[in-house]
Length: 125
Image (cartoon, rainbow, N blue to C red; front, top):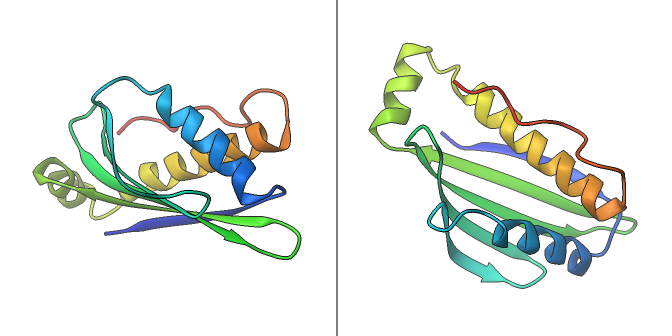
């Protein structure tokens, strides 16, 4: 089941792209794999979380008149994810939704020059 969140960031797509890709390059080796990349427009990743769940995460940068809309979509997958979904009656996606919001809020803060991260990591399952 896909989880999607969008934020308006007051910057050009190129500036957002630079911050987004520099943050990803800081990640631990083997945690992610770039599946597709269209500079300043689209980035698709395969990510491995600490709890053993893998997900496809994509970022779309959509220029608007006075801002750029950044849409993040996550598709968690695998047996462990399916078990979490059954045990929680489909509510385990809340943590993934929070994770996307935290990531987008921190991206917005970094791009717009706000001090430090706005939010901390979402709670673990």
